[in-house]
Length: 341
Image (cartoon, rainbow, N blue to C red; front, side):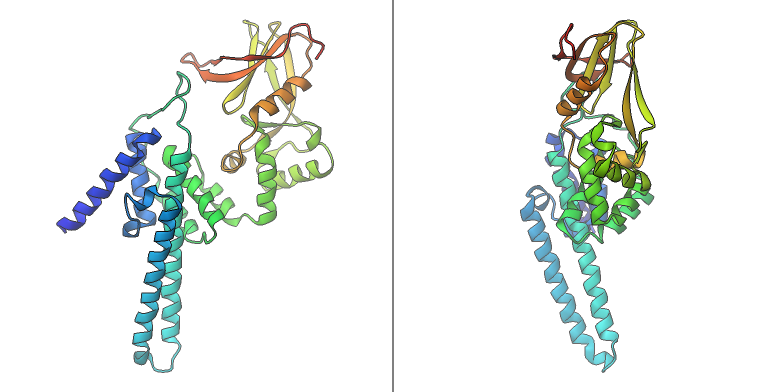
């Protein structure tokens, strides 16, 4: 027993040491270790296998395939006990299936670590930079993790394994980020719907999609109607708007994920942007796909907005301030004062 305890402690120390460079908090490291142990257990060779990307997955696959062969040999050796019945064959298939499921979960575990290594550090209220976060964030929900493990064991393709790895990485960093409804949606996603999601995800601006002409007719409208039908967006067909009101300081900002448009103008000026609402399910699904070209999308909004009552439009990164407001800094001029637009 002492040897087993030493192994567990050694893995925990090793993973925490290797994950320091990612900016994860102590609590996030603990959640990661718990999730990996749930998925892969002793099959996952910490820390070497976890930190070596594709080489890790190859070794995991080789190891589990060896166990599969051993299982086949074990059943074959016992076949005389079953005579000519099919019981031995059934046991063999059951063992094979169990090993395949473990292989899938272990590959998802490797992809989770890769996703965390590649993810940029979170931003704090003081601007860009590593953010360790508080250490009192709750552990992963047990029911959520049980559901996730069931879906992960069916992920036989590398694409699905990478996708589930990104999901778990997001949940490790921010418990509650992905609902169980989103897990079910991903598990049941067919190729046409996946292609629809991939086509629209790069157009997400903050918490909405700017309804430009591309979504008002033809293939674009059909695509949005399909996504509305499955609960990812609302407002296909043109019924919703995003309202921006210039404040008493002559400013109002439209935020993206990392960049923002800053409108300067007469206090009280109101601008309405035609919009498609993105639901919680849509946000969670789109966050796993190709990110937006925020500069391009925000410039498109700047070009389309009515300029009456405005004096300038600027574009730049932003930070949240302690008072609850937003500060856009290092901004560049998109629409100069006096321009016709």
